[in-house]
Image (cartoon, rainbow over all chains, first blue to last red; front, top):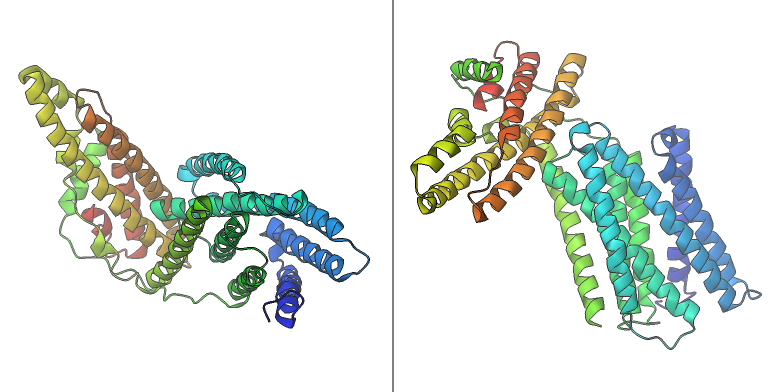
Length: 254
Length: 179
């Protein structure tokens, strides 16, 4: 069951991408693609990319080398696309709050630059590999991308948590699923690149299952309506400090 | 091998953080009722006195260098406590304002938006001020300005008062009175 081309393996490769296309259609129907244009485009792109890779994989006329070069091209394009989606999520998080917007953007950009350096160092220390360069290199490339992506998305979550910046529900859902997938993928690719795990079969299934779960999380956030909290006035504590306000007004006017 | 383990541990920590964040977010959404009670009162006059540069000059003139360092460290610790409380209060106000953002009334939503923005600004200033206070703790004779926190706090009080008025016209001063 854990082997390549088993039913589960095929299902976990194809099903999340079919779901991505369905989700893209739902988003388009609800006109939410105007709210999240890059995420919408990402869903279409990643589904098409994975279908292409799948058909290249099962086609007997395509050599392994060609497949790995297609994997390289797809991974690099998808990696760039993900950074654009992250920028879109950061914009959604910060655009209503100019008081912390610049700080947030600078901080996340700075952390992103640091993570690229860290990922380059990690790539330089990758375990030597007996496989052809285009396979070992693809492992290192994946580790590099997921290290940067996971670090950036976690830094956004930390920034929002420290400053208690309110997330919009959809942005939170998209970012959460990305965060989980990228952390899991980072762990798996680090094990593969470090030579701890190779060709065991379960690493592909773990990646596929986590991505499948992430797509279901997106479905939940897009399809399940937000529970409206009762809009009663917040009970404010009783206090007799009207004098306080007078004193503060006096201080402000000084 | 070691690097792989470090990266796996970092990834697992990231996952745990995301899980905790998601849980705390859903808990927060369901328990916003007692938020105002979390605001801790601050003696703003005492804080203003602590950040007054004239006080620093006075102490500098009156005390020997070693005495001044000891006194100044004590004042800086007190200042840090005030700033941390102000930052925490601002965090509570962000949550109160966030809850009020969904109100049907446009004026209340607008007031809530201003309150959240100012509370976020105060949290940012508080973080910067704390950073400077901790540096000054190592070097007490250096000058330090926490005035931006004080000004931000005063402005925030005005925004909280407006939101209180719009949400509950009968008792307009309650949130701001707590600050």
